[in-house]
Length: 170
Image (cartoon, rainbow, N blue to C red):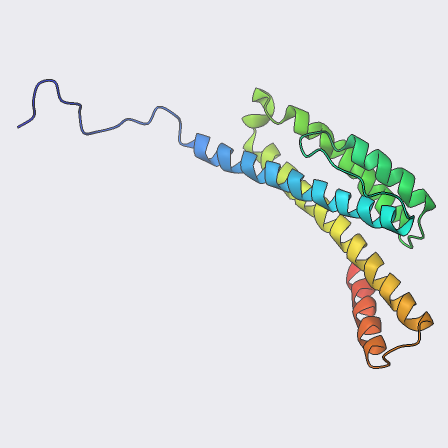
């Protein structure tokens, strides 16, 4: 028997069921932005180190625009074989960075398909930056292995890895 002033044992959810799905999609977009930011920061650090410049410090809450501007400036002076692809990735990242500001607007938040497409595009773009960065590092190692006398057994392994990266990227 229940006391007259007792709290009922059932709870009613006030939020629609789609709220959970939207929350997951917002989380996916935020995580994808974070990974993309980290990939762009890695590129900037790699080019800064190659140029003998101090390592840049990123602001994780800021827009990607300053990072992308720095990267675009650095890629012009770097020895980067896939320059056009990197410039295209920078352009696409600039376009997607505008989505960050719209993320919390009602129009965007209520469009689950747009949120899903945005998360997928961010992941695709991050994958492109990672692929270009890893390919560049492997190509540099291959070049170093060819010009530096050293362990002859290591050279074919580096060459094979670099060739595989170039083949996968094509």
